[in-house]
Amino acid sequence: MALDKQKISKKWIIGKNDIADLPLYNLKHVNIKIDSGAYTSTIHCKEINLVNNQLQVVFLDENQKGYTGEKFIFDSFKQKK
Image (cartoon, rainbow, N blue to C red):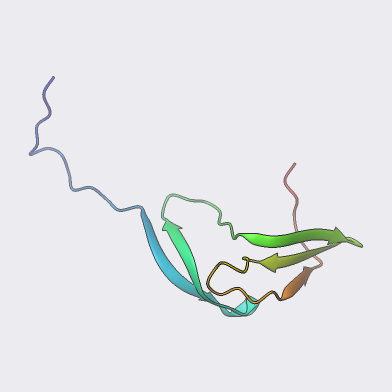
């Protein structure tokens, strides 16, 4: 079965690389990938610890743009099983 090139619609771009600031977490010029089909997002963390029912996180690592080494503490979070 041959494809009819006239019936094939233009391809949609669903992923794109960009740079973003996340001011709530003091992160600037972070390389990101935008995925229009995603339901959730992720961010690389150098360090993740659960201490006294608090989540302690250091976002990114030394080799990534925007790394600060700052530790953030979250009282409210969900864990996947």
